[in-house]
Amino acid sequence: MGKVGRFACILTPMLLTLASLICIVLVVIGQTPWKGNNAPSTALGRDLYFFKADTSGFNADPQNVIDHLPDSVKPDTDLVKALQGAASSKELKDFYQVGLWSYCEGDKDKDGKETITHCSSRKFSFWFDPFSVWELKDTSAQKALGDDMQKVLNAYKKAAGFMNWAFVITLILSAVEFVIGFFAIFSRWGSLVTTIVSTAQTIFALAAATTATAIYAALVGVFKSVLKPYDIDASMGTKMLTVLWLGVAFSVASGFFWLISVCCCSGKSPHKKVVVEKTPYTYERVASPAFGGQQAQHTGYAGAAGHGTSGTAYEPFRQQQHV
Image 1 (cartoon, rainbow, N blue to C red):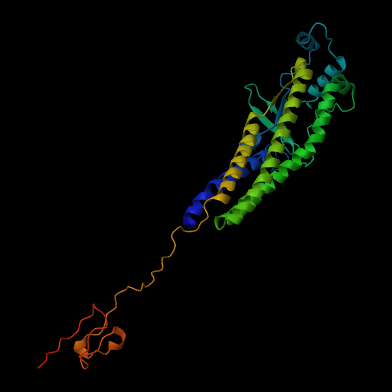
Image 2 (image 1 turned 90 degrees about the vertical axis):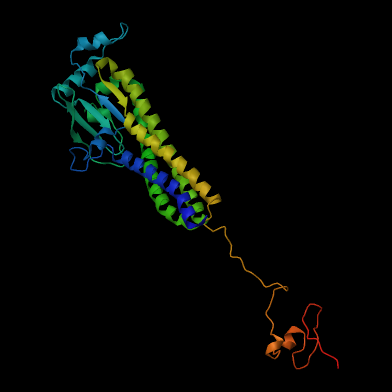
């Protein structure tokens, strides 16, 4: 197949590795401010989030809360008063979007257009704590939300550390896999090393994606069950999850093709150099007796001077006349 064929064989996993790397980078920069703490620098960065809490529909009227609760459940006045205070002091924004390293908050206009007004500073061990953000920490409102929400938040806090490390390791391994992949063009040993790195990258990518999906699904569930009566909604970021799981799919596919490149596409040409050897029956020119028979000793017959006969039945000889 040769080097050209080897390059074509490596091109597919290289492109898949690059696609996976780009997806992981996009996940990492989602909701990450780059210019101060105002907002993400790109529209894509603003649209990529794991979790979103929409508080724009919150109604401070207690009667609104009563209308949304079942008849057997009484509204918690402490929670309503706390949210009323946050809304009146404008501490309660219209929406909150949570990324890997930070969260962003903002307002909605009358047409529903969202504008991010502030993002928290980047933090490696980040996790979104609504009680701290809404300034409800250690208040009666926090207790009013019940144990279910607190349990989910505690689990989220513990899992966030592992999840963040998993994303960092995935990002590093993706970059290493792409760089080492160039050496796979020259040999199968390069493919083998790249396959090992790709396998590790896929494991961490799967772990990070699974953990993030499970954590934020649980967070959305508890927000909906606890805060829905107060017209506070929650949802998962479909764009972020799509990019994340696309990155995982690209990672799995690249690992598969790296493995194939170990077994196939050696890069050596199948055409071997053919050496033509002289056989014992190769014709060789012999000296003519007309020129003195200089090579008679090699041809097996006497020259013209000796008037000899052939040493074989197939060699010519000169006839002699007898007087």
